[in-house]
Amino acid sequence: MRFAAMRVPANASIETKPNLFDFVAILVMLGLATAIGSVARHTLGPLPAPDASTIHLNAAYLPGYAVRTTLRMFAALVASLLFTFTYPVWAAKSRRAGALLVPILDILQSVPILGFLTFTYVFFMSLFPGRVLGAELAVIFTIFTSQAWNMAFSMYQSLKTVPADLEEVSRGFGLSAWQRFWRLEVPYAMPGLVWNTMMSMSGGWFFIVASEAFSVGNTSVALPGIGSFIASAVAHRNIVAVFEAILTMLVVILLYDQLLFRPLVAWSARFRLETTPGAVAGDPWVLRLLRRTRLLNQTSRLFSDMLTSVGGLPLGRRPSAIKRRLVSRRIGDSLWFSLLGFVAVVAAWQVGIYAYANLSWPEIGHVMLLGIYTMIRVVTMILLATIVWVPIGVWLGLRPVWAARAQPVAQFMAAFPANLFYPIFVVAIVHYHLSSNIWLTPLMILGTQWYILFNVIAGTAAFPGDLLEAARNFQIGGWRWWVRVMLPGIFPYYVTGALTASGGAWNAAIASEVATWGNTTLTASGLGSYIFQATAAGATAKVGLGMVAMAFFVILFNRLVWRPMYSFANRRLTFS
Image (cartoon, rainbow, N blue to C red; front, side):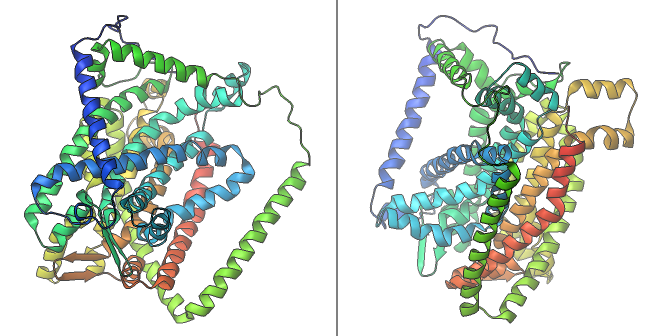
């Protein structure tokens, strides 16, 4: 097997004299730098500042709000990428570290967005007291918590499912750990990571309202941005402003899809695992345009060569090196897991003391019952999303041209904040006297079902073309093709998508179990509405209880369902 051959632009120029395309590209970069500088100037101002806390429901302000929101999301995305290339890598490479880091990742994924804000806002504001920068960092960190987890899970899943024959080849070439990571494992993980990065951007949009406009106890913060604009429009029942925000969001998504993600998807297609060329979409117009530049083309080559040299440094242990152990593996495991057990007992003891002083058993029982209600909603929605999006994702993954057409639509739908559907749901439920416990449930899956779609598309796109060709030669079709060929091939990707969709659905429960439109508020019984109401009331103990209960349900579900599926995929459904 080999990775698909890298396509070298046939018209790549070796001239370095700038041309018209260089000037256009440089002009665009200067405009971007100016926008970043303008936003950075506001972040250093005092809090509250007249132009930092007042949200104007005027369309003229939307371009500036869009720039600030987009920059916050990309700042969070950069932090998410740094997290993705460190935390899950350590968890995948070290068995002992993985025993601790993976459960922590489960917990972090299950902690609600409002839960992070409740505690991180105070921390960041204490770093920069009285400055907008503290609130900006709190918001960026909150957006980070809506972006990082699925990217980390995608990297972890890829590192754990690298085909054994490719690992053997890397050992045969004597690659060091550093070289193997950058020359084998990162390219193998890239298709899934690119699609999950797109999903992370959309996930950030989904939670942008809760991030940019929030209340912690008696403190209310609204940083200028599309999210706070939407929150203000919903509070004032201004339907025109809501549609203006939707239109602005659509333009922003189309711009970064065309300028960034479409070229990235085309680039990641180079790393498909196949021995025969599969179907590929044509290069996006941005790549074709950049190749016509001279100065930028040459500069990007120098930068690429520099990165290749860094990735080829002989760092880390080589396969032939003998690993010396100071203590035996069994003794090391015993010490490590004893330490973890001790820390867990101490933490449980402290939590028990706090809970005994601030909570009652009936309160805890009530919260657990609410958690069961929310869990039934999450399971139902994940099953429905699987039935709908797995066949569609496979169809799109096998047709790169159609996948490229559907890509911005899926990103836009995934980015649609649940708050924008409040008018429709609230008016319909009140008008037809429907049950809030049932008809607010779809809001929970609106922003998270796309994790399943994006991962299934990535899995299908990475499916070896020669295996598809073999299935055609053996005339395997219909239901047998799905059960024997495609579903086993995409199963690791589906598990990643369903796991993150499940975690996201739990998180979205806070935005979906309480819907407000003007003075009308509808509430569904569940853990999300409990945390929402406790946060608004500033009841820290109840917020903590709700977060712990949500983390308990998510981890229980992961341990009983998703982890066994991961293990099964690693044992039986990995290409080798």
